Length: 89
Image (cartoon, rainbow, N blue to C red; front, top):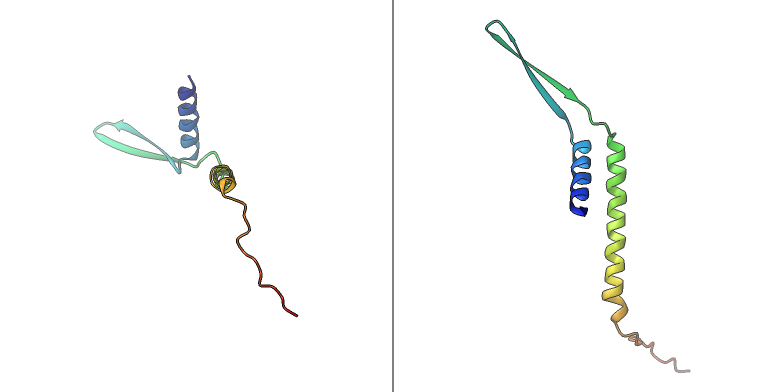
């Protein structure tokens, strides 16, 4: 059930974000065949696509940071590694 819903949403997003939808129709007139090509712009403006992609990258970057923080950074020992040289009078 979950995979069907996810695949449907993915298919819907791909259809909306496709660059140009092209439709062709052949009309027969006697012995001649005419090809008509119709171009339709996307229903989502390009700035919305750019905004969604940018927000998605920020979200994925935050998730990777949290994953690395939990798995790698928090497991490092918290010992002092640097000690300044003593100041002699």
